[in-house]
Length: 244
Image (cartoon, rainbow, N blue to C red; front, side, top):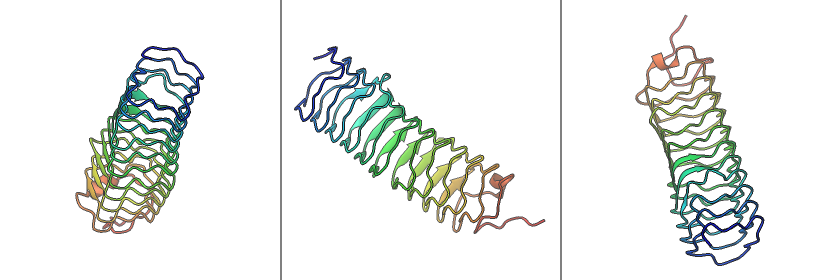
């Protein structure tokens, strides 16, 4: 099936384990409930495809540069690898992303409502303008990944790690939970962090210029420098804030 053209085809509940769909034209195709375990979708065209409740464990997903607005609701990516792809404005509602290893993937403007992230890693990825409101993103590793303009209000990132000087400008993270997280030179410029909790976090040379930090909790943080907060707005909790 490699390179096949099958626009809007219906593969619902099909057993496509080990199938080679590399380079296939699958715009608008339906894979609801299908098994694609150990299959290959390398370089396939997936615009508008529907993988609701599909089993994608071990599926080769790389070179997906024509894969906007794909639906992965309830799909299972557990332990899989996702590389060199653009999954822009896609839906991952209720998706199992546990132990997923993503490298050089754009999730720009995507939605992750109810997704499970435990133990996953994202390297050189783009989460610009994604919807993570109220989600649990604990114990996740982010490396050189963008979270700028994302909506993470009320989300939990407990014990997650943010390496490589991550751009997090204009992040909406009011009331978010960053307890015991690790940040290496993260850039929170202009981010809304009101009421967020960074208790016990490591904040190594991170930047909060112009960030809104009123009632943001920084109790027992390490690697923190008051210089990092020059130009921030509001009064945080747990810092020896300069007077005058």
